[in-house]
Length: 187
Image (cartoon, rainbow, N blue to C red; front, top):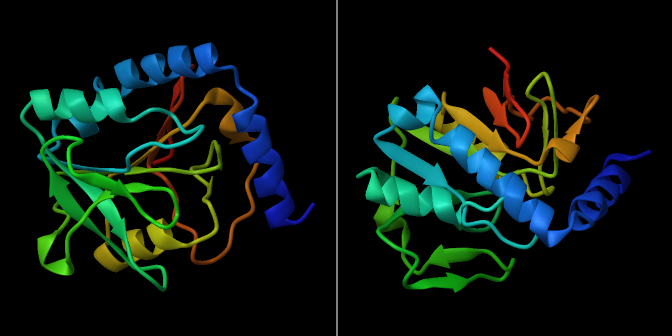
């Protein structure tokens, strides 16, 4: 099966998770995430705003704001380019052309990752070696490489963990993957 066929199949599989199961699993992932050292020691949380069938990031963002952490969410540009801009709430986020909620701002609002920044990475599927299949745009792999981001954490439902995901040279490895059932450490 080709990479694009696997992506479609795995997205369909994730979409088939019942809503109440997604909610329960997202809650379990939230509890694990806020207890890991990466989160506890983070000054900045660079995190996507969840959509469709992804693990919910809403409670994580709200908790991080309450914990006094700074939050930045991605703003997607063209050619696999994106930057992260600070938000203090969910107010003023708008849906972009890809259906992703992001702030309306220019590159001058860009925040740079530091050694105490945790980058929460979305994905379609992962494996126990930290391999990740994204949505096919290459945005996160490009960002991780460009800014040499160390603390990469992926959030996934247990069914998103596969025996292996297709890997290419440009694909970046996740340092930690948190599911509703376990925490996979790849270092």
